[in-house]
Length: 342
Image (cartoon, rainbow, N blue to C red; front, side, top):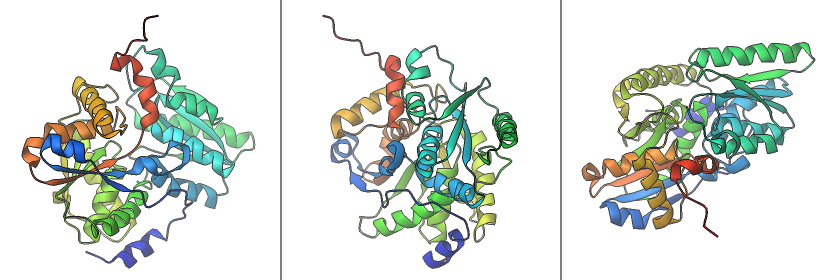
């Protein structure tokens, strides 16, 4: 355990551009609490502000802080076609006056025209990003290498590019944004009744490990249950262990891997594919709380809460809403809504 001052000092070693509208609120979901037989609260990181908000704003403060320190004028990033990370990068780059190149990977097998052109894809275009495509869906190192090749060509043309690398060959810089967020929620916990467990999406794992690391370093032992959204529990556990250890090396020492909790109960049928249970949960959350959650991350996280509700009876659950609502427009076909008949 360490103190908040020491953790803040460790974070201050890294350059940062502050854009997050923080602190984001914690909201009680009273109707869903009654339905599920538990107390459900939600951390509204869909309200981080710029470019429709979401968790990636916090992460990009550190990536783009490094970019600014290097006097970059162009930023490059890769992600799925409906990537929130890509869209948020384009928004923050625009705010900083940088050019932005985004590379969209074919991670989700779909013929939906909405998926290919609406949601975050539309927003990337509105933000003025140059859009490129990478035809492989699960090749992090290859996707990063393709960005590096593009960055090399841009450098030759006179630009000063910065690449936001997402593969395991590069340090988890974005996790620092969620170490900071852990300090934020620690302050908010002091005004709340005891929280018994935190549910959080676990994909790249940077949001997950940042919150887990920060809380443990502050001496807060609330379980942080990562909900697998991209790969199985066994594969994700290896990734989380590696990333958590790397984060410890970047900051002020390790936290034990024994504190890692994961569930893949809501993963099927796979990354970016909305299950029937997730669709029902997204609809119920909207209709009971007036709250929109996305199909890829928070929708599956809320689905895990619903599916594990029997073992959570009477407990206070805090779910971390990581944003991503623009993707809802890309999943119109999956919801099966039909236009009204004239």
